[in-house]
Image (cartoon, rainbow, N blue to C red):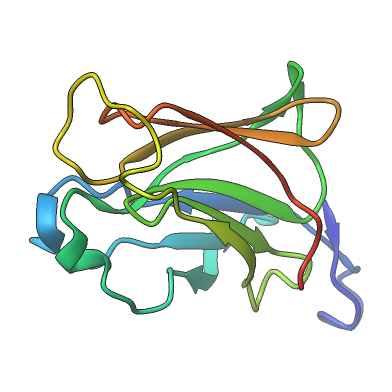
Length: 160
């Protein structure tokens, strides 16, 4: 659970939250805008959506490919990740780092969008499609691209 001070008098401060994503399927934004949902699941029989997150507007629809969330980093060296940062593979919007320490106000604290020309491609269409994100014990972030743009190794250094 996550501590939420002053939530409801007499109900305790510990709440259980789920993070859900709507995966983007259509190319070129030919679907409703996809986003992340934060759900209060403290009452398991009555989960309640409390917040959403979506990447700020930009030119992602014009860049080609899919635009929206795909996969979260769920483990670090085989262990479940705790804490308040989400690392999200967001197709043509690259890697997004989202702080959910206040689950009612998710906030982007970092991102990395690979340059489509930054790696040799064996195949592909020329646009970024960040597909997977993983973390290791040193804090390195690994992202891979499904469209032939390779592997990128990053290090999150906190919000600037």
